[in-house]
Image (cartoon, rainbow, N blue to C red; front, side, top):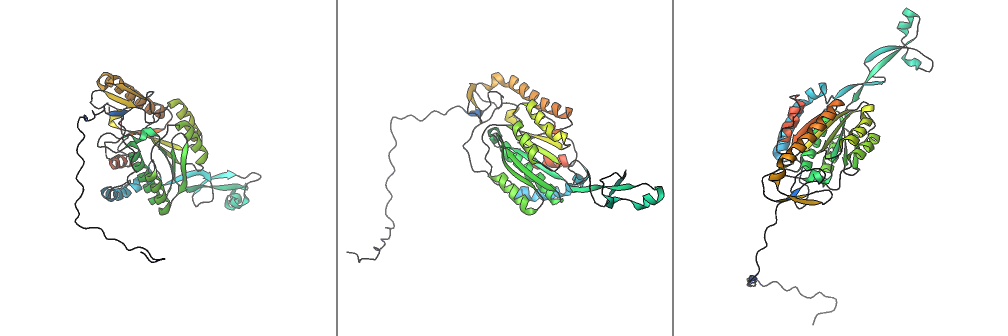
Length: 354
């Protein structure tokens, strides 16, 4: 009998007691037959991909990548004078130290900028105008729709590669004194981090990239239009996506940025399986965004599939070139750091090779 108000004594476990014998196998039940490999493909867009059980997103960078990543700072000097210019001359006239030109004074102008020496020589009123030195802003738009989760056997997913490239560009911009912003989107913009240039901002941006799990369908044109209202200061817009979307509404939406003289770079991220179907017998092609599926023999559709994909990639590049928009293809079976180094080193864009 226990005393009232006191807990019963703890009985220690018996050490060395045998474990119960394992259950006998079930007799007469055949082992389940393996199902055909599941390949992801949109019914509307013939894109192959294998589905996998969703996992927690891995950390973006391995220790080896981080060590090599530091070497990218060497390219910052080249970047400043090139496409990713660090200190762009702004057409907006301000009060910085670099003189631009004279402008004849008119009613309503600020008399504080009058050049009295010119007045003494000409007896006419002129204003000194200046070119403002402004921080470059890179706006990273990252596609997080379901198709970006595809990963071929032994390769990283398209999203993970795109996230690494986005983090690398943000790292370079911030470490050379510029700013980076991030917008993730699927059917619409799902998250937006305004431009920032601090180490804390970079940490928050990379942390957000690590948390994302691609899902939902693509609404790229609507997302681009939404971002056109979010991106205030003119800069460089980098869109990282597989671009499995209709091109006409996309370029119509990009017109909002072109009208405001933004620079635009389209980085198309593709897996080799999406360019040339892997060898197998019968496969199920499953749309990662809608769940629709169809069975087919890859050997029977390989030629048409490959031709269709080549046409789509070349059509995107052509339409971008017509509008003076830069386009490059990044493959998931190639080291992403080499792609960035090649681009920053101006060794040419990555041409599509099927």
